[in-house]
Length: 402
Image (cartoon, rainbow, N blue to C red; front, side, top):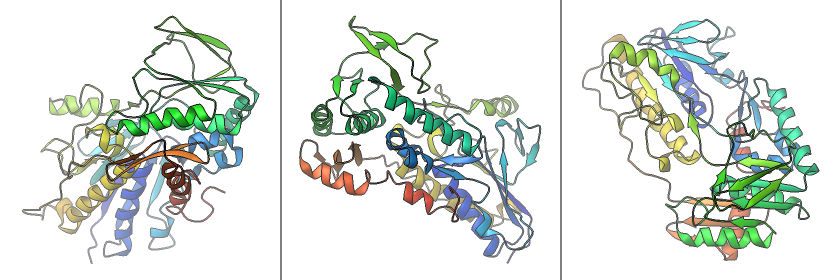
């Protein structure tokens, strides 16, 4: 047992952050009673965004996507006086030994994990600080879509396909249009068979699928789920009129908090797209700061390593390396010749995309199940039944989303 005072800070508490925080906090009950973990997030909840497409059409399901963060680490307390802590705040600056928050608070750390993710348009992200505010936004979105006659989805990746499919399946009388700039749907690193299958099954549900078309989006256009009748024009000159619009065309990372550290070190720590550079060990790409890890969407691994499954694998690796450092006494300058694990470079080669409740496309083990019913059967049983929200619920104590 070690009585060292160790402070681990995890910023961003979604798929990767949850996993790292819990694994490290468990050390408090396993030989490190004075270890404490602080988790920080701008919201008082984590949001299971994978389930957003179903949440649009199912109000009760939309409520179930939110989990309170103040309960996450309660099972890892070693006494009646809590050591672990949740802070609702936005990270503004990372320094070599401290971080600064928009609340004015400065926290010293022994180890830091950055898992601040990436921002998507609503409902991929819900810009609401409280759990009830988030639920209200999702409930209002449900009512708005119910009231709409025409729905436009811009972007034919997995999320765009899922949104279009869920709305068309639930409301067959509505006109749903999916516009995508590429020649086929879904990420191009997957086989064309699932792209063709997605088009075929969306059209079975009555979705108007338009490929090779890029929508000209005015700078002031809001994609907030409101009923806002508008006509947008594609580069082809065609007009697309809708009551409610969804933008599903990519993500943007928030990493401005690295600027002060970059200035201090005199080097760039970020790629041009804002992602933070990492070593194969998922440590920050700076020999001066081996006690900082970066996981999930915000790091510089390729896009194929950013799916939820891969984010979980990243978290496992980072947690293992962090625990190895703690166990070796790295924070007490006792570790020598410490060998850490490296990311294996793997990217996602499997994808399951629900298209409503009973249709779907699948690629697994290099085999594409596009137009066939095999994709429907597997996807409806594996993902479409609840978009994995029950799996996220198991990460939390009971009633975390009551």
